[in-house]
Length: 75
Image (cartoon, rainbow, N blue to C red):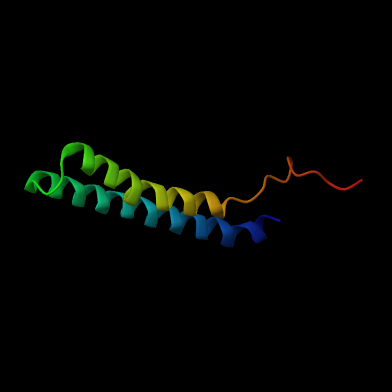
């Protein structure tokens, strides 16, 4: 059973690493745009939340496997 979950665990680790890298790149971009005067502080924050945080969070949430203890079994 553990052997079957290893590929899933590796995929989740890679997805988490990509998500964190994406959030950091977008955050840096928003800070640079704010510093350059292209975006106001609030606009930079909203852009970072919508573009940098929301897509990776939804992607990671979509990869979530149902907990076998919580899933009901047919009787």
